Image 1 (cartoon, rainbow, N blue to C red):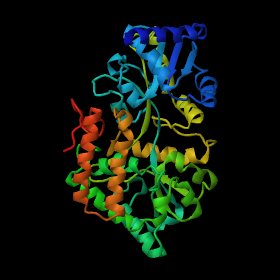
Image 2 (tube, rainbow, N blue to C red):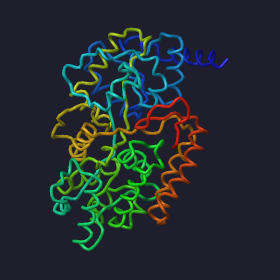
Image 3 (tube, rainbow, N blue to C red):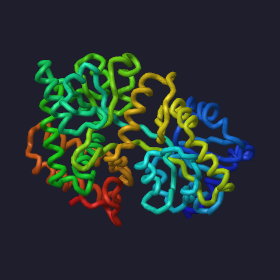
Image 4 (cartoon, rainbow, N blue to C red):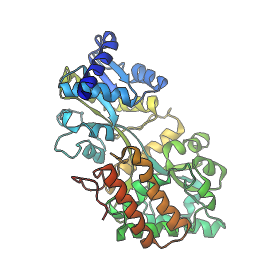
Length: 422
């Protein structure tokens, strides 16, 4: 009964836009660029140059899934290209055409993202379309306190601790800042940066000796962290006020500092730990359904979306950054010019360890995030023994994974059932 309703609903949706779709060669069905202003820019500035025409139809997740599932189940339909986040595309991996043969004309795509686009198979199930990310930012006056021989674009966490210590001791107050407030994205740092950099894991090795070493490093770093960090949500504000000289945050929460005083700040990759340079991209990809009406036309659109000029136009339309090596134009906003190269350096680093946003947790996502927040509050703020806290929080994490029946996602190894917590 449910399948019948799904197909009927999809057919009704198809009829509702059929008049417009009939005139377009490729229907581009997307969860991204849904705000009206972004949609208009995508149509006018990004897609208007594609020979043959594109019908770009961004949707909220509900309508997006309803029609997509109806067409995928039927094995044919009018959707030519699908644009969505990694987790959304991963749900339908077996339905995507192999894009390995698409000739990108020598364009260098971030290798870690290409691997993600295989969705655990030998085929290129999607091509990485655009990304947001988290990076580090620093007031330029902090650079004189860098450890000798340190490369700001290839820092380690040990060097970050040394840097923060030198700033605190030589200026008389702690200058490192961290978004540890109630609305800060601290949990994403622990999930996507700290644990992957030390344990090459987010879930399975949550309570490992390697994870313990990472938390001990962060405890040391906290000694040289501005205590007001427990109130910070957006790090651009304390950077602009001078209360903080070096900070970590999402690019959207750093942008104002670079736009207001572009000559005062530098952006750079997150540090590396013993297991590599963990980072957490918000990655969107483009895929082609096997039942697309004209697979070759769809692949031509995919190729078009990966061209440097299209990637830059997409950045201007959506504020998501390119996934390829590209020179950004000088007339971009200052934040984009500063943050783009830092993202590129981080994601293309030889020691890069991409860590995905959680997949498959459903309404347990908040409880999952709380495990990492609670670990931070107990270990760092309350000073409880790291080993005891990790063992106890691991029990909670294991229960959540089993309740959600969520298999592992990168950087953890694939699992048949719920992602194990060792």
